[in-house]
Length: 116
Image (cartoon, rainbow, N blue to C red):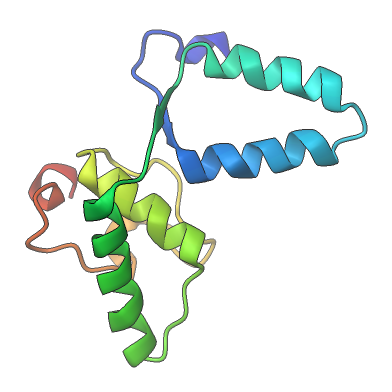
């Protein structure tokens, strides 16, 4: 994991919560927590604010109207990423192999042009 050091690696607070679930679900929570703490020593954790919640809610409502249900956590992760002008380096959902083919629409959002 040290290969990421100094490269501006970030993850969402939602992803961090998912990582903690893995830590405490593992056969060795103490060892797993040590590994997570090491990883977190060089990663920026991106939080949630009102703009991110609004963006996520807008997308969730639009997709539900289209009959497309996407996990709430995945929508929040996407909104955090876009709001921080960051590319998504791994698909939000296994059905999306490329961010540009995702059903999310962030056109008009302040970070949209910089990310896509």
